[in-house]
Amino acid sequence: MWKSDVDINQVVELRVKPNVYFGFGAIHKMEDIAKDMKSKGLDKILVVSGKNAYKSSGAWEVVEKALKNNGIEYTNYAEITPNPVADDVDAATKQGKEFGAKAVMGIGGGSPIDAAKSVAILLANEGKTARDLYEFKFTPEKAVPIVAINLTHGTGTETNRFAVVTIPETEYKPAIAYDCIYPSYSIDDPALMMNLSPEQTIYVSIDAVNHSIEAATTKVASPLSISTAKACIELVAKYLPIINKDPQNKEARYFLLYASVLGGVSFDNGLLHFTHALEHPLSGIKPKLSHGLGLAMILPAVVKYIYPVKAKTLASLFETIIPDLKGTPDEAEYAAKKVEEWLYSVGITKKLTDEGFSEADVEKLVNLTFETPSLGGLISIAPVDGTKEVVKAIFTESMHPYNK
Image 1 (spheres, rainbow, N blue to C red):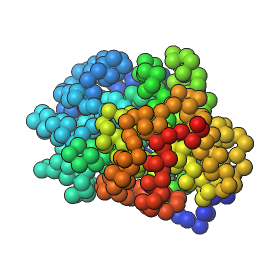
Image 2 (image 1 turned 90 degrees about the vertical axis):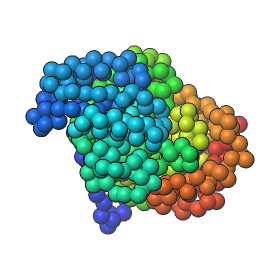
Image 3 (image 1 turned 180 degrees about the vertical axis):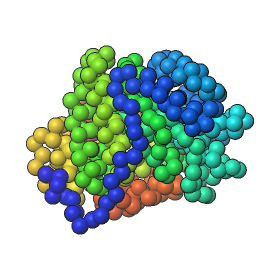
Image 4 (image 1 turned 120 degrees about the horizontal axis):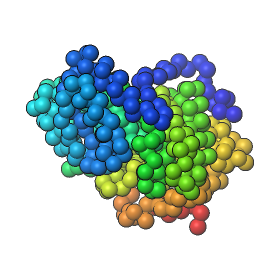
């Protein structure tokens, strides 16, 4: 069904860039990575991580051994928090420069890896700061090599050229996308994700779903972004309920991670629009808000507003969760309600008011959406005109559930 939404006369760029070691046991490919790094003179590395997961997941034991076996010195900046801030990127960069780091490794979910990508740029661009980077005061063309060891099945950052960092004093949460921050080496090992908390498991999986829905419906969507999106959503729809009941189910972890990879490839090709552009102000204001939860709370309203112009594509994407869609514009409200029902069924029952937002915040959220560097670019490729009225409606309608 989605194929009829594709303009075969539009020339698109199909991106399939980094090689990713994938599957149970992939972390042990770190030995090969370390050997290759040493052969290229990359004998000093800055490791960027959060405080705990890089060790508790089991990743660090293998990584440290591989680095030592191959004579690679390391220093670890282990202070990255969810929704990383510019100050931590600058502090990690300072530590890396003082150490003489020739490469950067991010171990964790999207936050440590995005921070590592940012540091990699700053190490290669003397005198620049994280604020310079995320306020678009320069356009980087180089970065030191990046190793991405992913610990969640949602971000997709290990597969693509994107990174996000918050500037706390302005509450801006911009996104960057540069070819120089494609990871040189990536590892996706579901064994490292077996102990994700139930909430984190749900939130990261919904992040992958949002990557897919947006990438399949932008103005620059391609057959690759749509087909990978469809496969991602089908896998999450099948395996997220399984993992919710049986967190140690290895097959479910494997395929949720594969879904995340597909979502990452999808938005590397099709890019993103409303849901991510509108979520960034939410977690910019409330840094402790889980990114995946923020996305989930506004997704039904986004579906309602884009469905009339992308009905066939969305009906195809939602085939496994809303099988009775016909792909006609008049189904928009029904599709939005059914998406919300599905989110509730997998464990996401919150809306914006449950996280402390109110209608009084809508004006500020709208303004942040249009003021934050980079978010205007996402809005501009949404399938419908991204007017302030549309953005306001999405925020307002996301305060409370459609299904009351």
